Image 1 (cartoon, rainbow, N blue to C red):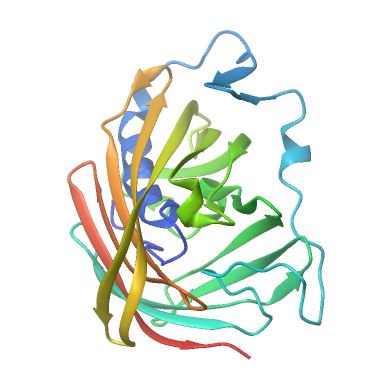
Image 2 (tube, rainbow, N blue to C red):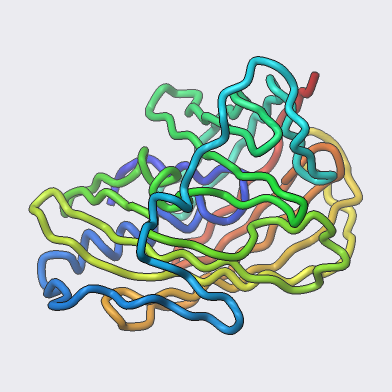
Length: 269
């Protein structure tokens, strides 16, 4: 697969989506479609309803002013901008810029553009007292990369539960997010799968990136998934979050593909 990787700093989804799609494009032609509808899903104490998936994916309402949504380790003010540089063992080096263009009391939207003009994608977050949740994570983050020599695939989130980033990271210690998704290839093949993100708070570390040195919170993530009921190889990710800035550094390892991302510049009104 030779498409562009979003690989941005906004949680683990964008770095994990490209290798998942590569697997889908490789296996899609020989994987049979499921013969019956997927039943409601359960993971520990979290129940995911699949009756009306669209009701779980409502984007934040548009606003031209500053919203009340806030997180100590992820700014959400209108106009906040991050520039990042990364490298990926499958796709090489890249740079992108992300700017919040919609911000309200229930969430915000972060469109991201590759500096070389090769693609764009947008990430939408919901905001509650419990924390932040990235909506339609695989579908949105993969929109710029779902093309390769084996074909193309469109990722769609069908249902999800849990949080991407709790309001109180230190108190949370461990948490999960679960996503049920489908991928449709350009030949009409439809595949189904799910992804579970197991997050662990690891404490504070000093991190130096092109934008500066920070005392950052470290969060390790184990990413487990299935494709048509068969387990995929686990992925690992580590993000370092600086207060009032967001993610300043990220590292991922997934399906033999390693990547890292560093914050180059940041500006917030």
